[in-house]
Image (cartoon, rainbow, N blue to C red; front, side, top):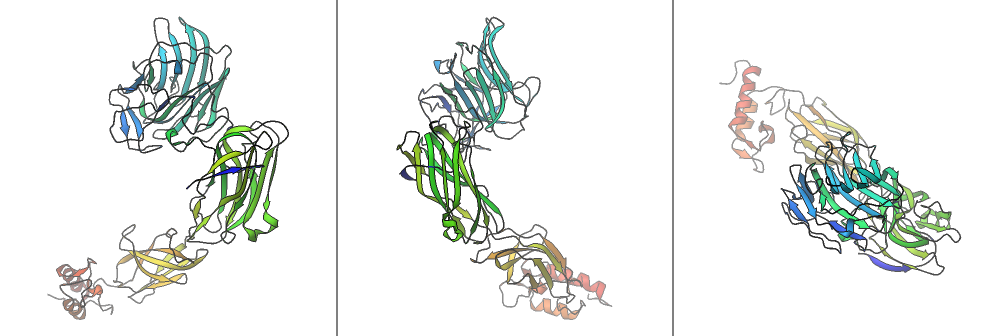
Amino acid sequence: MMLKRSIVLLFIALFFLGMSPAYGKIDDYTRLLIESNTIQGSQVFTDASPSGHTVTPYGDVQHTIANPQLGSSAIYFDGAADYLNIPDSEDWNFRDEDFTIDFWMRSDAPTEYRYMMSHWVDGGGVKRSFGIATDYDEPGKIYVFFMNTSGEVHDYKIEMKSPETIVANTWYHVAVVREGNTAYLFLNGVLSATDTAAGGMLNNCPNVLTIGARDGGTGYYWQGALDEIRISKGIARWTSDFTPPAVPYSEGSGDTMVSLVPDVEHPVIGDSLCVDINIENAADLYAASFDLTYDPAALQYQEAFEGNFLNADNGATFFNASLLNDDPANGIVVIGVSRVADIGGLSGSGNIASACFTVAGGSGTNTGLSLVNTSFEGSEKGTTIDVVFDDSPQIPLEIGVPGNLTVSDPGTLNSLTLSWSGAPDASGYEVYRADSSGGNYKKIGTATDTNYQDGNCILTNVTYYYKVKAISAAGNSTGDFSNEASNKAAGISGDINKDNRVDGRDLTLLARAFNTSAGNADYDCLADLDRDGSVDGDDLIILTSESHTRIAGGLK
């Protein structure tokens, strides 16, 4: 549950990069937004932007629930005349305005000149506007162009090619941005390429906008998936590195949001755990302060760092972080940051600060962090910024993993000995056994120390496989298994009474348990030689086949 709070004065802590205007919502700059997040096989495509453009599918382009990036599905193009067309509009006749095009992309097999998006007419004057595709000469590199042409002459041209080569079946966030005379290409929020050209006038291209092909659907079809396809006009949303959106744009609230993001999902004792304090959709943020609270029994504070949001324009900042009263027992880190002098605030999303800890205890439980005594201020003195706080994270602290598990045969014919190295903070261990490597492991017992004697129905000359898991002080066994180890009690198969012979005494024991199953009072697990849960003719065959070779005269 999010709680809205009104705040004042000095710093904040968060995770992101970039000082551009808010991007996590549908706003007035959003001129096209095609999302998926629907059912398998649907061929209904909707523009969720305020413009509400008509989107027409061609071929077999459809929504698929296989390997989505955001939401429940993505848009799949099979490379054989699959594409989307949207009628020409002033929304993407950019001329000399700033704009941003961004989307998620996954290629089945990167090959040359596969178009993700295009807006042009080829031939009869060659009125090209822009295109985003894989490169013709270097397949797998992203190629972007903007141009204005008169006949075959380029009056204005920008070209960018990513130095990175995309990998098949991998999602990438692609962002193409123009601000003034400079263009930027970002892959996964990292600046990949840039180009500059004066007189940035793009054509008023009299053709449809095409997703997944070139020139209205005339070829070079995309093969793979696209999602969250957005065009923004009148805004350069990013001009420096940023973190791509983690939820569909239609789910963005548009509020200024603060959240805590741990960098390890399931830490164990001894691990380093850093928490990024993130802000999203900030408007004119000048300063902020807060107390970061934590459980000192679970975490030991190490240090905190200023993020790169409030100084993203290289403006001077003050930053301070220290334990409250220099006492770690309080479990409070006091953090503050502010821009210096009259340099205005910053808008957008980014990382304000990060605090790092060492996991010291609490295995098998969750540990929480939260922000209290928070205060956010705009560039005008006395102005406050309303902030929505996301849920404080509850971080599961895993118990450590036992290691170096070995299994030895003590030579008693009826048991195997296990030993392992201990896990920090463990109050005990659970022992698991299977009949085959990687098989169906079942818990067979517990140990308070780092060894265990398994005498649980050990058949001679049969290999058993083991793993061990630690139990936390809270009584949970939430950690990972140890390595797998195996061994067998040396002896003769079919030696039910463990006298190192297979003879009539073993036959008698099998006969007494014959036609019984596990759970029956007369069932003898040592007579169940094939370990199928019942004593029957199959076990008799095993025993008699051994007795012929082990007993002089044999059993007939």
